[in-house]
Amino acid sequence: MPQFFRENGGAVLSTTFDKYCYVNVRHLPPFFDYTTEASYAKIERVTAVDDIEHPLIRNAMKMLDMHELRITYEADLPARTGLGTSSSFAVGLLNAFYCLKGRYADKKKLADDAIFLERKLCNEAGGWQDQIAASFGGFNKITFNGDDYEVNRVIISPERKKMLNDNLLLFFTGFTRFSSEIQQATGAAIKDKTTQLREMLALVDEAEKVLTNNSRDLDDFGRLLDETWRLKRQTGSKISTGSIDELYEKAVNAGALGGKLLGAGGGGFLLFYVQPEKRNAVLQAMHNLLHVPFEFENSGTRVIYYSAEFYDPNARREK
Image (cartoon, rainbow, N blue to C red):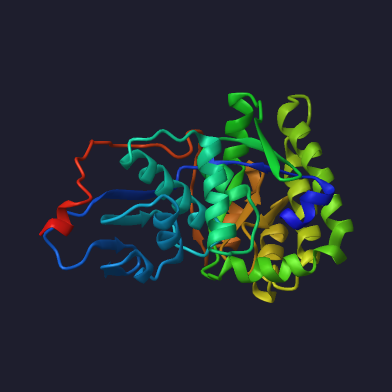
């Protein structure tokens, strides 16, 4: 979070995986009594951009001076679950907008623009890592300094990366929450939690060494997950709940070496590092939760289909 890393520096290990959001954008033909249609969990049809209720869509259209659009959004994962769906939508929407305007935006620009869109224009509290991950894709160490960041690939052998992937189990708790509300509470407490946050920051380099050094025991990564989760729980009262703590301890008692609640906290998805011989026991212990198999992915945001459109901004006004 900026209020920490601007003074102390910051870093995260981050990976994207094979669950996606899809954004389709085209200009709305001039036959309707509305000028923009946005379809997500609801359908909005408006005649002025300022009338759009969805803050991200409204601010993104104003930011890039977009008009008369049909926007469709769908996702593999539910919103407000800690897996960066909001930032993935922001990055994908901006990518589509630039494409529709016939302009190329590289991954750094898309990440920067998405951070500005969510954190400044939409005034949502939170960190920067989700926008960067959604844009760049892959397994990265993201280092934050001042008002900038650097993205470096984590160089890990394919065999070791597959082993890590196989040793991670993801479960949906069923609890959803507004990340920005938790981030606001966490951000307000940051000055009092600097010691824990600095300890978490130090663990990033150690975890990277475990991943990249083939002579290290990969199981240490699971133990580090446990250590960083127990530190993170101390940084905000809303990060965990009694129910989540019970689920976490149940998995650990069944054999998980460590894990964490993904995202800001309060609900969403639990990730555990589990040795192969303990996998069935943990799956059984978590049988009331939805297990979500996944594979790491490397691409980040990309245009799947593009067809140039002729758009005359005066066409509607001439009628």
